[in-house]
Image 1 (cartoon, rainbow, N blue to C red):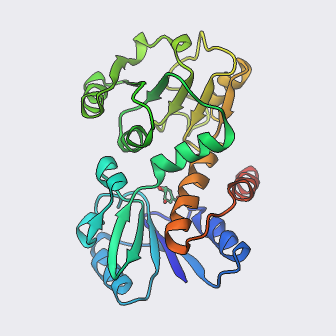
Image 2 (image 1 turned 180 degrees about the horizontal axis):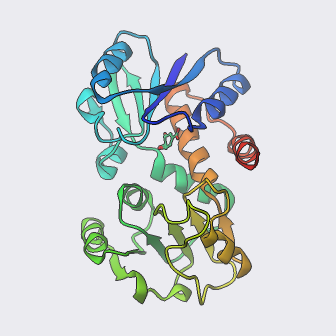
Length: 261
Ligand code: SKM
C-alpha cells in the first residue's frame, strides 16, 4: 500500500507518522509519504495513481480545491464542503471525499457527550466543511466579517450572528475554526459567560492548547484540542483506503506526544 499527503509546504505534516503507525498496527505492509508538490505536478501525480503507483492521497493546503479537476467523482461530503482532503480508488475510478468535518464529528462523538446548540466561529473553508458534516441544523455561525457568516448561514439554513453580538452562555458546543490563536497569544473572542461543561473545541493543534482553550478550561468547560480533528479526519481516510478502522486513542497519544516535544 502506497499512500501520501500532498501539499505545499508539507514538511510540518504529522500525517506520515500517524498513518505509518496505523499501517503497522493493522499488520498492513506499506508506506505513507509527504509530497511537496507544485501545481503543475498535480496532473502527473493523479495519472500515477490511475497507473497504480499510489493507493490513496490526503490533500492539504493549498490544493483542496485544485485537485478536483483530476478526479472522476466527488462524494456528497466533498460536494458539500467544496473541497477534497482524501482521494481513494473504487473500480478504477478516483473518488474525492472530505473527512475533515466528519472527522471532527467523529472526534466529538468519541471524546464528549455533545448535544444542543452549536456555535461555529469562523466562516472559511474549515467552517464550511464542519457545518456540512454536523448532524444538526441547530447551529449559529459567527465571523469577524458578517457578510461571510451570512453567506454560509444562507447556504446551510442556519443562523448568523456578528462576533460581538454572540451570547456565549447560549451554546452547548463551541467550535473555533479560524487561525486566530496559532500565535499562542490571540483569541477570536472572549468566552465570558461560558457555562460549565460546555464542549469547547479548537481545530488548531499547534499550539496544543490555544489561548481560547485555556480560557475555556479555566471555566471548567470540556475542551477538545485540534489533534482530535486531525486524528479523526485521518482515521476516516485510513478506513477509505484500507477498510480498517484505526484506533483514535493510539493516534491521539502519538500526535500529542510529538506536539509536546
Ligand atoms: O485535511 C487534513 C489532511 O488530510 C492532512 C493534513 C496534514 O497532513 O497536515 C491536514 C489537513 O488539511
